[in-house]
Image 1 (cartoon, rainbow, N blue to C red):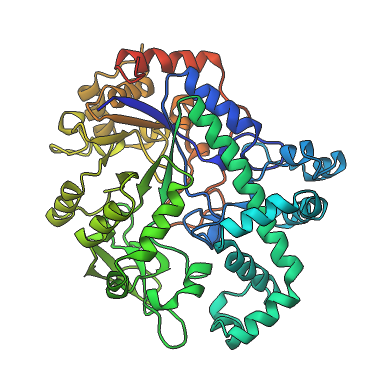
Image 2 (image 1 turned 90 degrees about the vertical axis):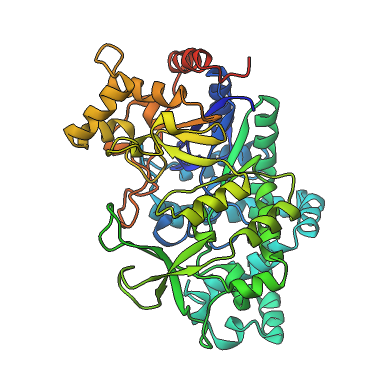
Length: 491
């Protein structure tokens, strides 16, 4: 089992003069940076269209890519946009993603690209639609969202919400051009993704993607298959997903996603899940299963509750789903996000799966013989400094109690000469865990201003942090030296 390491940085956080990171030049340059730093893995967050709260974990499709990630410079190079279009697209929000501005400015540009490209790309576009039948339902769903004032699908007129075949046929005729435009945008996304993925593979970089355990209620896939979810006759959730109160949130977290009707999934041999994982494997070399403990048992909150306090634990599909995924998609490599309230049953499910779990260094120093302390790590695991939901290391060192930081200092031998932050990274890099992942923010020494997400809080800063420029050769050399020291380069 070869030791390796990588960096967590979402595509949205890449530099760009157009307000958000894309699949273009800067993404390719970041792969060059990873290679020069001796890294083998680039971990990203979910890549679907963002929904409620701009969260990548609330997407409207399990197949579609985020249209904002389509690189505009590449479209201009292909003759689908003009220099004037690019000037119009420039967004002056250094260090932040302004989703409201993108929501208004990006669709017209992508529509122009469609109108210029639908004739010259006719054969390639037709081939994409034929090879990806899901795009027809997604494009219709998206066009209907706009037709009905962006209301959730279960608030559409009854015929559209219930997918009446005659009504849908009429809408497909009326919205033919809009549907084609949304499908063309996905064609562009997939084309650019394939170019980026091929480049990563050529440079020896694996892409670790994220599979959210739940889908959004206002999602094309729930609209298509309401029978697979716990919905009532009015197509409203009976209960929704969340997690119970804990030391980080006294009210718990109320995510609001619809819960699965697991008996129906089991009756089909978990076919929907197998197809979903196959779709993710189309993009990623490794898939991180978000909220893995929810497969053993999940926190169900009655629909309409204002907090997650009133929820209860309900048994999940457990080994049955894990075995179905392993049998149906045997070539896929997984990481289990086994964080949260871990019971013996959850730990047993992880052991039975054979998936590597996660060891978060920031969780190690709150007292006791924590499983997150490096001497308790196991080879078949992934050590993280922190995830997208955690404080950056610099923020953690600054805001944690003196007692907690002192434990880290004593355990890891932190000192001022090396720097506490670099010492924490050293502690993770030296772990026996086969894979070590650090947020780029931690290598850059960034603080609270660079935190990616605060769980359970609707902050405007959530999901919005991004780089103004990529780090250079000096940092790459420093990371490479530490990576070599702890035998993670594969040399």
